[in-house]
Amino acid sequence: MLLHSQILGQGTPFLILHGFLGMSDNWKTLGNRFAEEGYEMHLVDQRNHGRSFHSNEFSYSIMADDLKTYCEHHKLNEIILLGHSMGGKTAMQFAVQYPSKVSKLLVADIGPKAYPQHHQDILKGLSMLDFSEIKSRGEADKALSAYVKEKGVRQFLLKNLYWKEKGKLGLRMNLPVLTKEIEEVGQAIKSETPYKGASLFLKGDRSGYIDSMDEIGIKKYFPNATIETISNAGHWLHAENPDEFYQKVMNFL
Image (tube, rainbow, N blue to C red):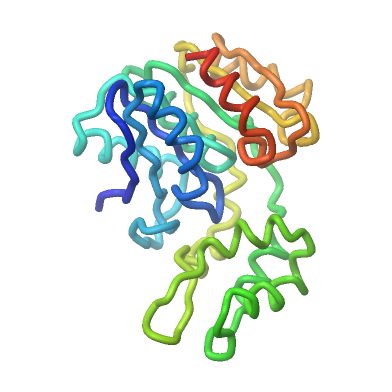
């Protein structure tokens, strides 16, 4: 099974992995900017997300293997790899499992440690969407607002809406499996050996995903890591301050 992707531009292969409940579309604006700088951008949908295949199996080691299969299919070697949140965990796992395949690693607002599960309200709200009754994005947004108060988060989640058939909406992500396997999303990466290549960890100044104590854990697995902060940004730092995010990535590359 091959992951779905959007490929933009030509040049050095540069892969981007979205976060939990996201998809490759979330990165299209920045992907186009990087493509203009001479990179072949691969905006990848991870399994059970976007237009990629659905599966009952879901873990970071499995998703790292998905990425290995993808790289082999497209004949990609020594890739630049960037991942946000869940995608950052996959990127870290891939780098420690297959270090020779990664020339540079970039991780957006996540560390290698385990995180407590905190998506309960979002998953419950999505599961309560009744598409036999809901016939528009506006109706879906209204129903979801009972569980997810932040409009920006609802807009992000509802990018998953699509017409399954004429007159019937659905969600692209594999919600039953992602709900069942939610504990996997917070798991720490697993490796006996570090990735010694150049690494950049970016955190939002209003996000609590990476704190000052996490540097020890990051350096354990990624001894050549640099940690930088994106101003005026929370967890969705690439969307909240895309210009600074873009500039820090380009400076690193």
